Image 1 (cartoon, helix red, strand yellow):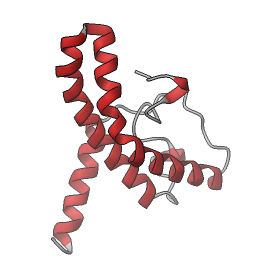
Image 2 (image 1 turned 120 degrees about the horizontal axis):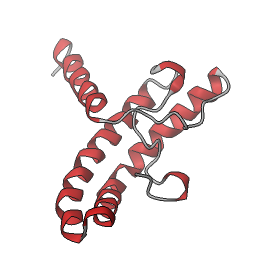
Image 3 (image 1 turned 180 degrees about the horizontal axis):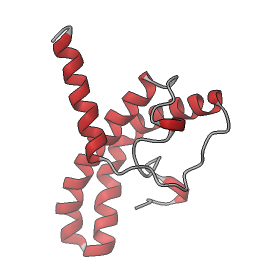
Image 4 (image 1 turned 90 degrees about the vertical axis):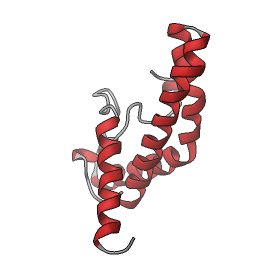
Length: 123
């Protein structure tokens, strides 16, 4: 696809990623200035693209802790695949658009901001 079709495809992918992902929590650190925010957004985007496959470990682990092993390897794996795609697409978006303060104030598109947040698999 080229031209309008390509742009429409990207808009659909980004729209789905935003619709399926939970909004960032209010306790996430806010950058103090424009360049701090842009730098954090770029770093977060790269980190999320690189670590997105860890969602295939994180989600089954979290689900199995709450609902047991069978749920972890079934439901957790399905959630892991979904979150992998969402985190990777959000990461690519943040890398491409790191200079724009969108969403407002360079807030993260996904929550938790990083796969392994606060020294643990954050729920």
